[in-house]
Length: 307
Image 1 (cartoon, rainbow, N blue to C red):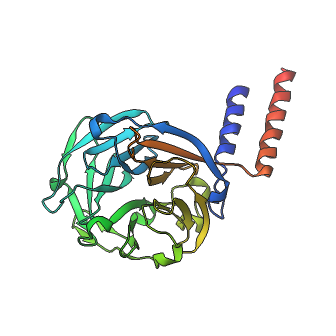
Image 2: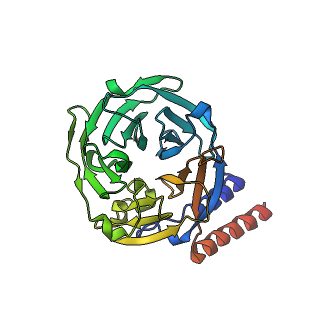
Image 3: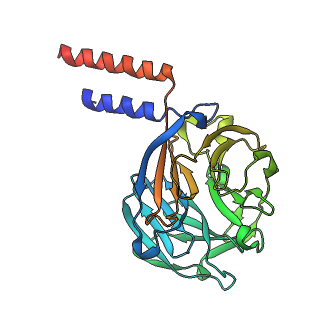
């Protein structure tokens, strides 16, 4: 590896030091970037959920008008989109509020009110009639306070975590069998422990590389639009760290996801400002990590001068 490439790799590694065996520690996160998302004839407005696709190095998001799903780069550039050409008959408002990526182009979108999850294969430029997709119902009709988020945990054959907005709030975990339509989702803990005014999205941390094999891989990120907070919790509902989101944007933040480096991505709906937003949160490395990187940079600089 060249000196230049090695320096770059060291710099990038420090940017990913937000994760440790203890968890992400949200108190060390700060705003890294804020990007406007394309409106795409309305499909890109009212961004309500986002998910990270590691095998594509991209993000997918949906708007709660239920027009379709959009693939974007990690800097918010549109890569493609796929329209929803139809919804099941019991979908009265087409509230696409939850989104999870399963790998190999497979996505799951959740309709808030009937609390139904629909699985489909993404095809850029294509369309999908969700009435014909494999689907699982896991909660019954909850009106406008239904399921707001879903996240996939790829370990042990795969499972899901969902959050219900309110009246009452709920955090569920378990399996969704799209081949049979069966659900084993059940309450994970009492959401009152979180002290949040609403539950807007959830993200598992099982796919963060630095957490693999540790208890922190079981942790969850839970987003609250009304409280303007992001919290890291264990699966007993204990809040381990939190981040105040109120200063990031005046727009309503509704979706959260994370990549394998521990970088956090949020989406905010347009809220009358013209564009939805992609907000990137990056960790501030601990002083010891910074000193380690600087020592490495100094050594590499010395070697470069010796040549």
